[in-house]
Length: 96
Length: 391
Figure 1 (cartoon, rainbow over the protein chains, first blue to last red):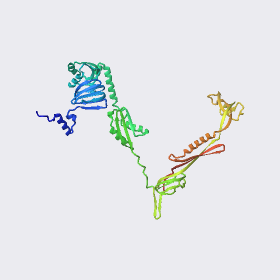
Figure 2: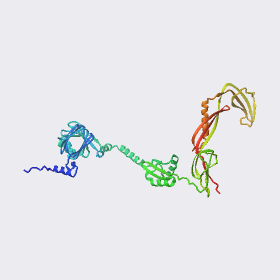
Figure 3: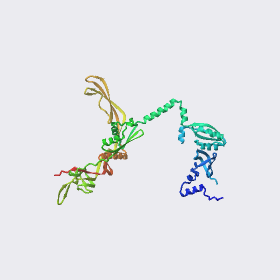
Figure 4: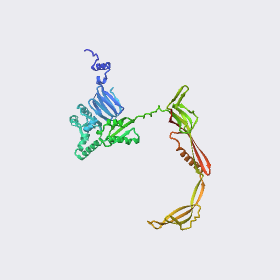
């Protein structure tokens, strides 16, 4: 069996994005997070809600599960493209 | 989007179940507009959903096993439904809207900027003559015509702008500077003094200086001459003009008595009666009044003859004795009063443009009176242009 050269489509796209200075979130379809103060967080390119409570929201993304912790968390807006979380956000934890 | 949902109407729902996250993901997958999601407990959640999307929740509910109930209805659709049968209320709202719309189509206030208070009425009359007045339809306004007419009809107006903001018509007027008075330079003139003074300074625009600074001049004396002479040239007549500033002194005296006279009634009185018959006066009582100082009060008693040719009257004169004493006045108060009166007297002689340089008061006592003399030194324009009788 021929060994893999390591040039997966994602890696190719990442290189192209780097060469042509294209935004990575568009080319690689990566999730995008926009935090306004600590009161609202907009997540784009998500893949669904895994868990939702007043103190924790776990959102599935292509890069893994992102956990948003805080208090009085609400889902202001949810759609296939984006989720807006409002409340007192204290932490945004990325998968290790 | 929220505003659109508010207009269209939305419901607040309560979702109960175990798979609430699955419920949300399915809503997203089905593209059901859901927002304002809040977690109440482990198995309960509230959310807002549009009226149109609410029936589409049925398949999601079936697939997740959740229970959905409506807790509140909000937005324009439900508001309309609630008031649908309250015809008078809806009618009132419609009438009020119509009245507001109608009233807002009139001009309710006219403001003119750039004119003085006294001119304001004149400009308002001009506007009225063109049919512009409070209470007119806004659609009947021709702003360009108003601007043009104000500039054309008023010589001093160089620019006018009319604008309508809401129900207020604002007209801004800008006036030009008045052209300086034309000087008839062809007429030979000279400048003479209008009063006795000491020349302080001179600004000669044309003509020949006839006096020096610090020189005392008399009224009528020539200050700037209109005849120019050179040794080997013929006489030349010019329109002499300029400003001559001189120091002028004014003085006024005021005298006030040193003693003030007080008169008090002693209580003693005497009545003397007279009979007045036509033009004659006949004393009834003895006429000798024993009082040195007395005031009188007169009363008339008509006896007979009212309406007749010669009426007879009795006149009673009441003499009230008075004790008259002269009390020395308070000197400080008297001086202050005299000073004020002297200043008031001298002030009337000062020209409005005079600049007061110095002012003092001199007091003296002359034959039982305090005399106050106010002396004022002013700096003022003393030159006056008069025609020169040139040959």
